[in-house]
Length: 213
Ligand code: DX5
Ligand code: ZN
Image 1 (cartoon, rainbow, N blue to C red):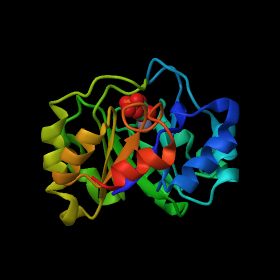
Image 2: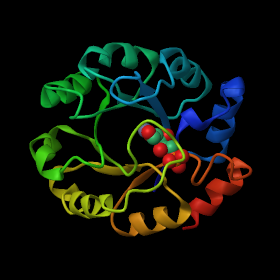
Image 3: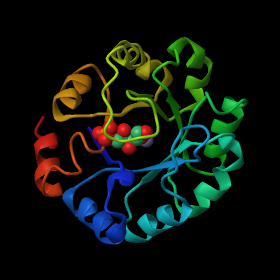
Image 4: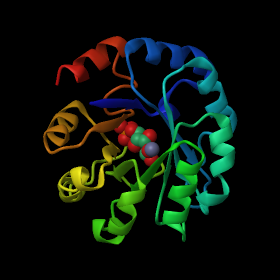
């Protein structure tokens, strides 16, 4: 099970210390939500924040691009230190070309879909993605309610994992109970925000609880 702290939920007054503490607590991938205020109605982390996290850990960083025209931002995000870049088909006209461009830079390509987006619309892209992420909340903010109808999409994508060879991850309202339930359905990784990690006591204890699920 991949446990991926949502760094937009971290204390930005102590980003280095937060990153080091999460690294020591045993997280797997640092999840960085980059938002432009247009594709989603919020503006969060930037390239300097990614660079700061990169300087504080050797563990993988994924950047979730909630921006218009992500193909134009790939080089910037890669240079800032991303190992995985997630892009939305809702924001990019040429998805296969962009996923291939991410791989051409030696990074892992991530495909992330909004709650409203059907699996059928991304089937042709699945061969070009190393990670497929299902948004279980509308992107943009932490602390939202889980959207139950996304569970069916998770089941469908779990049944396609072997055939297309991707890792299935979940982003949004991942509580310990939901992590246990969705992991049993075939989800491999989870973005941890306010539902399971931040504000849930010491990181080592919160993570140990999740590892025990
Ligand atoms: C939402 C973000 C995540 C996540 C936060 O756009 O991608 O940061 O939802 O985690 P929760 O939902 O648990 O606060
Ligand atoms: Zn995210």
